[in-house]
Image 1 (cartoon, rainbow, N blue to C red):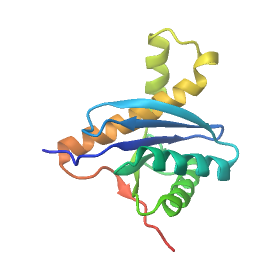
Image 2 (cartoon, rainbow, N blue to C red):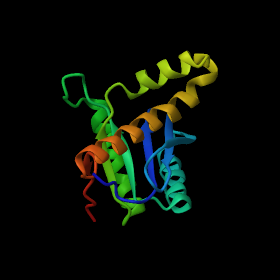
Image 3 (spheres, helix red, strand yellow):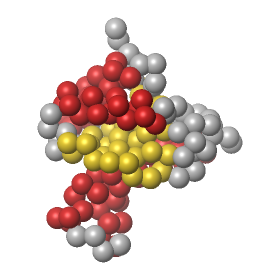
Length: 156
């Protein structure tokens, strides 16, 4: 299967921090970009829109937190709202929601394994979680031949 060519941004939305990752144009490797403060949502949205302008991605992939059984709770509803606002702000660049179960756990384990402590590593864990989300989305598309997750509809 072939992957659509173009850079993508991966976003891990948290209450305090938002991790951002980017892929190379060939969609092979996801790398950390930065951690955006998340408490001031309008400021976070502006920063993400600026990153979209800077990186010119094919799409933005946002991790959707689901329960282990696949259900959606308050955290998922919050991320959906955030992704809808982001989609409006960066249209015509599509925003896609992808299942991110365990991404932060996976990222935290990886950071600990590489010797990064949790105090110093918190903002880096958010970036690493964004990398895990994006890498997983790239892998999904590579295997299925279809864009990952579901596209956020922009309602004007």
